[in-house]
Length: 167
Image (cartoon, rainbow, N blue to C red; front, side, top):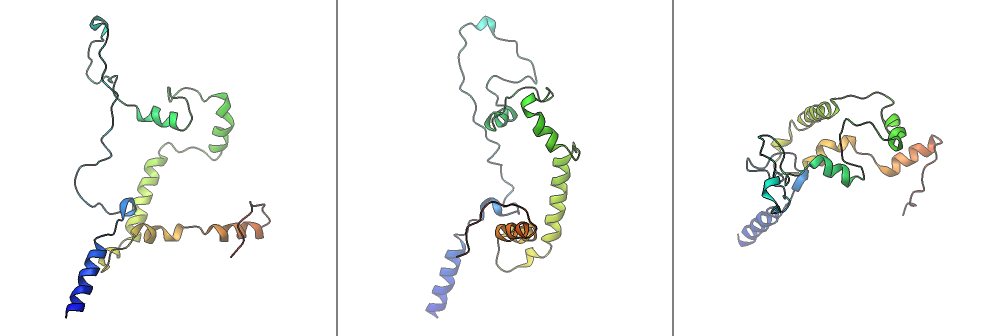
């Protein structure tokens, strides 16, 4: 009896150690979102209080972050007006990227299609006895095998970068 009880306790202890992290597609709680918290710039004391602008409701604050400008800077771009014309240095890139047309609602369209795909793929996953990594289950049909893909391109006559030899 003791070995069975010990085995059950070991299984419970090991199952408590699982960490699915961001790969679990199911919400784990209704609590606050820890990614909403943003660091703000330091508060500074102006040298002359007479030059302070009058507060306007809805206007941005000097300590407010601009995530779009920060992302553009992090990716090596120059933050500014999004409606400004494309710099001449990026003209060829924009032309190549938009050669088949541009869909203005692509993000919303992809989010809707992905939600529908995940709901179709996960109809029976909630009835499993032991939890699994649902990310791999849902997207397994869309995974590419790098070696197999490279071999297919080589058989088709395309030049491909060298691949490590099979062990």
